[in-house]
Amino acid sequence: MTKGLRTWLGALIGLILTVPLTALFYAAYRREGLPFLPFNLFDWATRHLPGKVLAFGIGAMVHTIGWLHLGDTATTAKLAEQMMAVVGFVIAGMVVGAVFFAAVRPLQRSTILLSGLVVGAVLGIAAVLASRSAEFAPAGNAAGSALWILLALIVWGLLLGLAYRRTVADGREETARFGAAGRSDRRRFVLELSGAAAAISIVGSILGKGPGKGQEAQGEANRLPEAAWSESHTLPNARAAVKPVPGTRAEFTPLAQHYRIDINTTPPEVPEVSWRLQWSGLLEKPLVWTLDDIRSRPAMDQFITLSCISNEIGGDLIGTTRWTGASLKQLLPELGLLPNATHLKIKSADGFYEVVALDTIRGDDRVMLAYAWDGLPLAAKHGFPLRIYIPDRYGMKQPKWIESIEAMDHWEPGFWVSRGWDREARMRATSAIDAIATDMMIGQPGGDRRVPIGGFAHAGVRGISKVEVQVDGGPWQAAELRTPLSGQTWVMWRYDWPLQKGKHSFTVRCFEGDGTPQITAEASPEPSGATGLYTRSAMF
Ligand SMILES: Nc1nc2c(c(=O)[nH]1)N[C@H]1C(S)=C(S)[C@@H](COP(=O)(O)O)O[C@H]1N2
Ligand SMILES: [Mo]
Image 1 (cartoon, protein in one colour):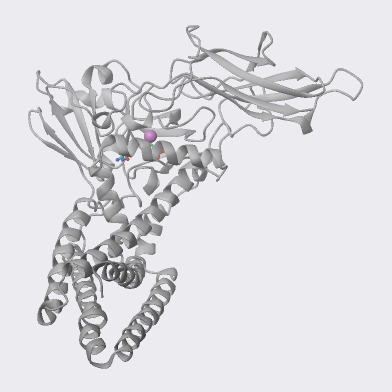
Image 2 (cartoon, rainbow, N blue to C red; image 1 turned 135 degrees about the vertical axis):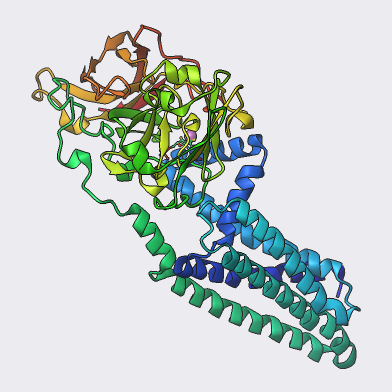
């Protein structure tokens, strides 16, 4: 067999062996809560790939999802990441198979199985280490998880060696001795191996589908003790005169619809019982707080619009809910900060981190350690048990799943800042048209007919003083502004446009509280947040 043919055969065997391996990892993950190696390796890569590569990947993904109208960006992106993780894992298995078949010399029959064993063990150890470093669930069963990964990959390596022996080494002798009979024996082996692999893959997938421990653990963290605040309360601006145009995104985002963005294929599961907030660094002495310690401090509720810096103009990586927490400024006196402390480094269970200046905290009561959204404990994917709110900054500056806070005497770049994104990440003023309600026209046919046009405008906590709509490049017309939920949320606007037949294009722009106009020059989200005007056309 030529080396080229061996390489291809190796890739095929790699595929045949890695698909059932993936299915078994999946079944063990769902039923026993053991690590799903493809996700952990993907998360590990996310933390180690160069920032440029990540930014390109994120940008391409967000853009493609929006462009193809694939649905809600955050959910679709997570799903795409999970698919990439699985496909990448299988491809890696094929590459290892190809290299193994190309590199091992057919003559060394006796050492082939040993080579497979060594390859499996080396990969296994590397996988355990990488998986560990991306594993944020507290290592309840760290030894068991490590053993499972190691054993699975050793068996995988042994099977690779066995397959090599049966298809290349034995085949060599048999082809020499029996000619075509040897080749057909090889073919039969590959077919049988494929059949076994398919059977294992199917059984693994079925096992993984059923309910199991992994799922239970997740269900537990997500099980919420009470009803959401919004179910039994009216919003503070319920009686505002200006009503949003039907079809405009919800002013108060239902929790289930709030976007989720983070560096994890699956959110860290942090059990409250063992969780502690560890304070360290330039303090008189280190402190350890429980969640109840924080919940027992005076609580504050704030309606907040949070946006991801990767959000495109008019995109859906932005949402508004009611946050509850403790003002960090009020907590400062309890910390015993040393006089030379200037910054706090906030570290999360998933390895994410950001640095915030003490001056920012001292200058703004609204900076808070938040533990509830819409009256409920934070959902696992939104940072349970604790996250921070820093007004006016994009989400990338605001860690979820906070575990420790270190007082320092200098600034340091955070996770995304050290990967090339904006140091300040101040939210850009932005506005978008969500609805052109042709089916909700005001007035009678033949009379003065108006088409309700509506959307939102947002400029961090700087407020919105004016929104204007331009039709077909004509003069800018003032829209009506709805009283916002708070000074930290977006502002819903509407403009009832006097209908004209034909196709028309509509553009919106906003002005910040102090009159600063929204930046009109188009810029992509990377590195400082998207700018540019939103335009949409419609036929009447
Ligand atoms: N620990 C941690 N916190 C994080 C992130 C992360 O990856 N890990 N992502 C940040 C980013 S980029 C955004 S946009 C917000 C999103 O918060 P949400 O998912 O609750 O909407 O979380 C921020 N906090
Ligand atoms: Mo983000």
